[in-house]
Amino acid sequence: MKKRIIIACVSACILVAVLLYFVYSSTARVASFQILQVQHGSISEVLAETGTIQFVRTVMVKPTISGEIRHIHADVGDRVSKGDVLAVIEPDPSQSLQLSRQRARVEGARIDLSEQGISFKRKRELYERSLISPAEFDQARIANTKARHNLNMAELELEILELKVNVEVDSNITHDAVRIVSPLSGIVIARTVEAGEVVASGTSSYTGGTEIFHIGDPDRMIVKSAVGEIDAGRVRPGQDVRIRVDAYPDSVYRGHVERLAPIGVRRPGSTLVTFDAEIVISNPSLDLQQGMSCDIDIVLEKNEGSLLAPASSVMEMGEYVNIATEQKETASTGLAPAKRYVVYRCTSVDPGMSKCPEAYLESSIVEIGIESTENVEILSGIEPGAYIAVDARAVHTALNSKHQ
Image (cartoon, rainbow, N blue to C red; front, side, top):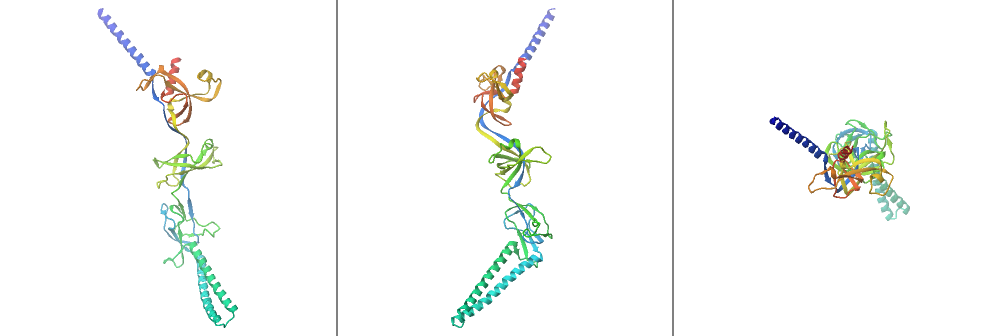
């Protein structure tokens, strides 16, 4: 009998201990929440979009004379300097004939000047000996001057013609060879012809001439993007932009908004209206290539020295609240057409404490400013240095369940 009493007492003590353990452990788990101290820092609001990298300046290179491509000296991806020979063309017979005629004109003017010079020299000797009249001498002098002017004009026209078509001497071609030179330093981004093809002049053809090369200037690159009409009103020239290229995800490039189109565009098959935006890349590198896709973050607004709280510590409580009953600190009454945001502040914090008991947590209505994915700017409602709960929704849920 005595043994049974002892066993019953021990069992009762164990049951009470187990119950007390679960009660106190459950209370401890529910009653404390992780907290942190709000501090000052910088925060920015960004607009995330996608875009495509393009060269600011691209030039289509066309021949200045019609003919057949004999040599090609550049290909896609090659870096060229201004004045480098890209290709050589053998002009067609009519183009060569034009050059030959102009050279013949120069040679004829040179012969005429020589004859007029000899005649003028003789007439001057006769005039000095008074063997011819002054009028006859003036005619000889004027003829010599005209011959000199005609030669100068013919040589100038030939120089312009040869400079225009970049004529060079090629020992492998019986006719004149025309050089196609690069108009700028850059990268060849397209070549549309092969050796042996016939091309048309870009200055005299009704079709506008044959495009031979496309050259882009890599020193100045832009990102072309489309901004939705909802956000277009907040995008302005000069705003900073962070650029991440899909091909180089670990690199961040900087830029700024150069311009935003004044007219919106509705893309085919879409009901959305977008505005084309151009972002100039401030630090382009040779790794960037035209046509690469990228993600951009347009910094719409940025504040320094703001009071910041983690995004998880701020909870939205609804669009319309009754300030007279919910927020007794203010003297105003009625409905306020604004969203209400709440944080849970710890009113008693010991040094080094990382959690706050439930009994010391109280809600505070705050006014917020800029929101980012990580932090929220606190404009009013709590003071700098205050300790708040990290997970506002967890606190809210716990308090509500306790009062039910």
